[in-house]
Length: 436
Image (cartoon, rainbow, N blue to C red; front, side, top):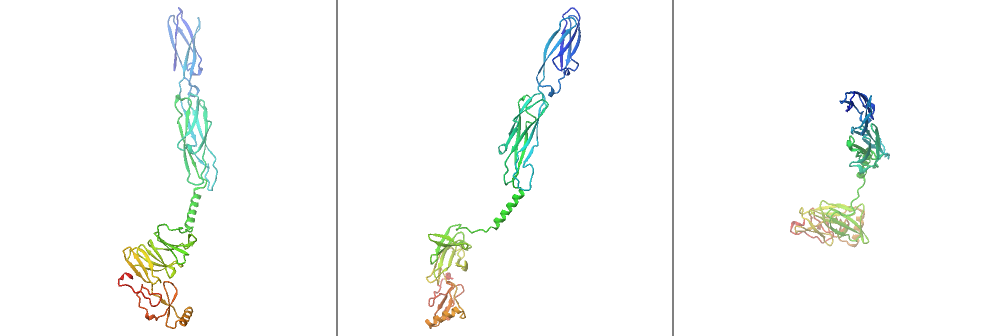
């Protein structure tokens, strides 16, 4: 820039004048700080001082006063005051190193509780002609998920210098889980805003937090736990999982059987005023359909008949939890009730269709005469009853029965029907084929 100076000679004689530029660093004046002029009487002359301020970091933004003196060879020295204002220029550079950190600082194959805070270096280079103070604030969506500290909170930025601010961040490590990535933002606020904000105004930071247990070890533990769960013995439920349709006490009121819509027959033991499920034989049987009704065989508490939703009737051996027989007349005709005759010779079933069916157990079988127990029973019976008799095995009661009649006297019974367990009482089926 040029600073013009005009000199007027008010005298009647020519004037030899020396101009001196005072107040500014002489290095700013390109052609020197002195000029010499010859001014005619009553005339004026003009000259300019070329001024070049140095780089911004060496010339702070301010007003610089100066004085220009005019010294004639003959006469009195005069002076004039002026000022040079240097406007703000330049910028404040902002960078962070490193931008990504992790806790712990180094990965490990084995569990480690190391969780030292990490440090980010925030560097500010003042490339302007303004002295500044910088304040750093931590923000971002994950700012509340970790603790942070800025040292110092405010830093002075002198011209041309680089100032370091430290940011410490910390987050406790979880024992398990996937690595967590926290995204933070360091924002710089300058005390003098005439040049705007820092360049750039913010720095994006990333913090990875790894669990104490490495991922491979977590995967191994999950696989081991899954294997243990798969191999762990599963106990059956403590009770039915659906509606209970039938509950029956056995003859001596020592146990109870229950049938349910969950398709199971469960066995319970009477314990005072409460019932306890028999273990591990809590479930006596699992049927194909809902169990609608149960009925113990009167002559033998070890057997129970079960009527199902689909019309099937099953005969179960309670102590052995074995199904002895299964029979059906019409598929899907729900069994509503079961009733045995007095001596367990017949079974009557009521169905949803309105039918009442008459069932008889399988025919008895003769017991071998060579069996020692059979011979003892026969000898004792012959002493009491000299008439002819035979010993048979009752399929319902499971006990030997003495029949005082010849086997030929029994009517021929088709397969799937039964004969009675005592002589002289042979209920015959009705003409309706619904009995079989």
